[in-house]
Picture 1 (tube, rainbow, N blue to C red):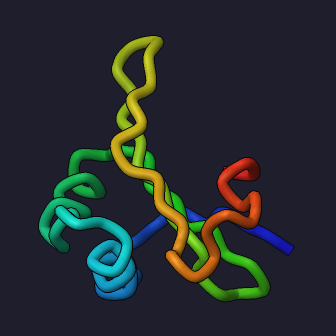
Picture 2 (picture 1 turned 60 degrees about the vertical axis):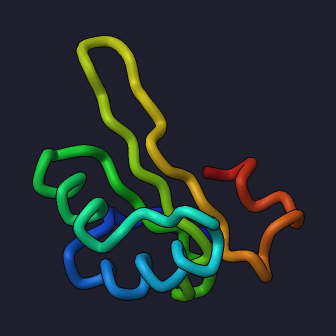
Length: 84
């Protein structure tokens, strides 16, 4: 079962560690913290309680800008991003 809880400050260490494994130029913990402080939408993707990915989105008026969407490297190419 997949659920999408809101990302909070508590998850930032795990998200930052995953980000460093996924991207050659990863966001820092500060980038994620700033996004939360700014009120951007930020969610985790969890399967059976385990984080499998995350997303950060900025909404401006009637537009949404996807700032970051990531799936853990060992779980990529299995169709998970279709559900985010």
